[in-house]
Amino acid sequence: MARYEKLNNEFTDRIDCPGTEKHYRLTRPQWRKSDHDGPADDRQEGEWCVMIEKFLPLIEPIRRMAVYEDDVWVITFPKCGTTWTQEMVWLLNNGLNYERAAKQTLEERFPFLELSGALSLIDGDSVGRVQDLARPRHIKSHLPFMLLPEALQTVRPKVIYVSRNPKDAATSFFHHYRNIVGFDGPREHFFDAFLNDSLIYAPFGSHVRRYWEWSKDPAANCLFLTYEQMKRDLCGVIAKVNRFLGRQYTATQIEELSNHLSVESMRNNKSCNMDDLLEWAKKTNYSEERQKMDNDFRFIRSGTVGTYKQDMDEAYIRRFAEYEARTTLGTDFDFFF
Image (cartoon, rainbow, N blue to C red; front, side, top):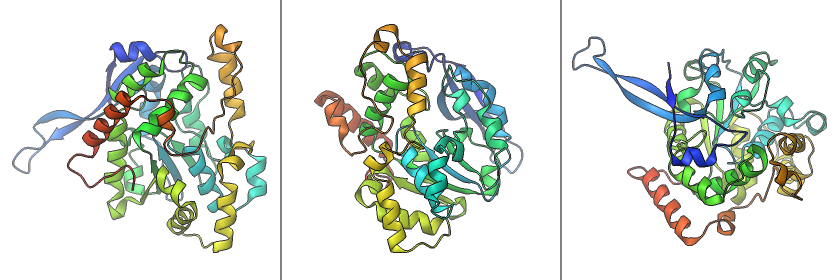
């Protein structure tokens, strides 16, 4: 059972906005075992994360949610290649049925588990929708490991986790906050909140590390990928996911899928490019001043590695490098493998 308390600090105060407001710190207590084989002595603080108030009613329904062996989950911290990976996984797991994929939005084919608890102004029951999906279910989530359904660790469906280097992840998330969530503040306030683990789904470092550690357990059935791998060798990553899913596609079919997954193709793909979400955000989350501005933002933005150089000065680049060093300290984990 996760405990939660209101989180208020200078960083959350600066990034509170229509789409993500009223931040909470959620903690999953751990039992400290006694020296003998008897019951636990007491509780100590375990994993923790940040979510918004709208998420709190979803904690228990998600924890108790049924999980099936034929489920396929794609999990990431936001803006780490989620949409890209979803489209790849769904097509590989559905006979490369491009025609059907074009007729149904990615949200219909691969719904977002905690959507109704991740944006303050979104209504509906995203958890119930996922529960009622026809099997095999394809499920997207940004949840940290501590908030996943408990059954996921025993049923062991296929889970694909995608990481990204913190500088690009933060930069892409900033543009998402500006154009989807309704944040009107300076990028420096957003970067400060990211570095100080004070925004939704934070801490970024422990989010990635926990899944990386879990993926090293052969029984976990979790494939860990990075955005950088996908950019460097998309065909190679597709082949790896192909094997993980137990599919058998030819090199020609894999190359065809790689072309379909190019940034330009994805931007022009109406089933994936989230134009409806962007229009909703413009009408719902934008200030009156921003509604009058021309905006060429696309949900699938640059699709490149190193875009942080356009948004960060040298001081922030150094601070993010220090953040990366703290996250990887004492492990053989590396954001860029």
